Length: 342
Image (cartoon, rainbow, N blue to C red):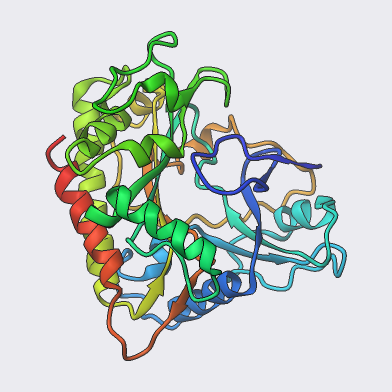
């Protein structure tokens, strides 16, 4: 079994991979991000079982599987509370053949696993887009990006978007200041339209709602499904907002990852039931044979129709006694106030 390039990516750096069956997401990482995942996981394990799911930061992060050090060791140095079976872990450990000087690779459950026709949206939070390690050139460049985009005015910015091509290549109507053909393409993956980073950078405080409307409304899903999606994401953002008010962290260039299903047959099969937040599932398959589960009906029952995840922690840390991150909560508040009205 081998690893392949990520099948869908709305934003971020090149390099993320996935297992062939799509169940695991593997990306190059840095010690600070790995430490943040470890600390968050340790905090979650100390929480009482009666604490509602969604109140802990780890509930909003992708499920943490572990870390690999290709070229240094073939052993997984961390396993996340037994949530992933040994066979699945070995698939990544045995086949990760990437050249590098002892690079570290973060292994997460793939948030897109089981989706048939996903639309995805990456929103970067905060107006500060650099940390203390950035050189003067990057600091100046990132300040200009923030000042000239909704990162500065709203403390969030659309970093990238991939939507199902529901209208035979026809693009949404142009927005003030730019043409859709200049910020989008259909070359990323057949039957999908990709909106690059300049799409979000050209949106203003007055037009960002139209950009978000494209994500939720420019598809063939029935209006009642679109409305349900908007309502559910609105509630999720409020829940994450409340969660982050209780977390003493600082996250620079963290992102919100939105995904929803365009395949109406999956909505119908689930009677249009889309839970606000789904608890992790434990894989207790003890069989010896490797199997592909993408089309497994039993697995499909556990895959949600939409979800929201908090991602990208390369510049994240815990900051005891310093209160919550105002940049994060302000950006999320502005976002759910806009989404409520689209």
